[in-house]
Length: 174
Image 1 (cartoon, rainbow, N blue to C red):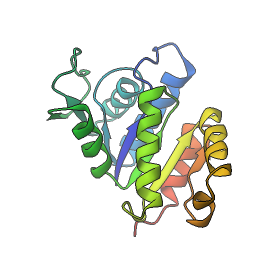
Image 2: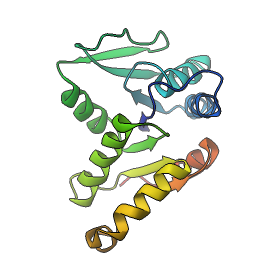
Image 3: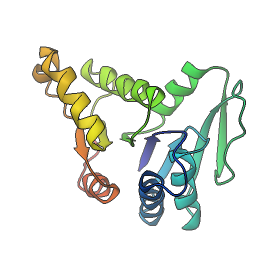
Image 4: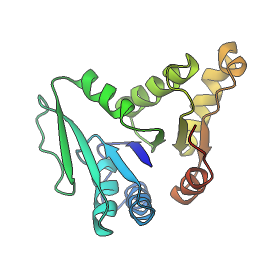
């Protein structure tokens, strides 16, 4: 199973968010899932570190023009020429998207998979958001957008990595 993880690039190691992302990576590796992420720090580092501790595989999809080096826990790196190509590769690499808390970059990533799914350009994909911030945002946007209700698109919101794992384990790829 291939899963792309999105989330804050600034989450610090001592935070609950970082620890939850690391736990997700550990469980993903134990299940033999292949993880893709943006390859840098914060949630990306936490998940990669968790996967590496259990001998799993994380591919970092990085932007060549970025001023930081990728994290040291990646088993493979794919370089993209620009930020939008990077986003495209992150989206096309997986059937499941797990979105941890984050800022404007993570919001753009969620909005991308949401919009593509609403337009049936990502068919039979599982989208999971983790955290109350996403629940509130999705409710707000859906309230003002009738198409969200009519399309039947479901974005699954959970509060913990374990709940996300349960959804993934029960998901049937089409």
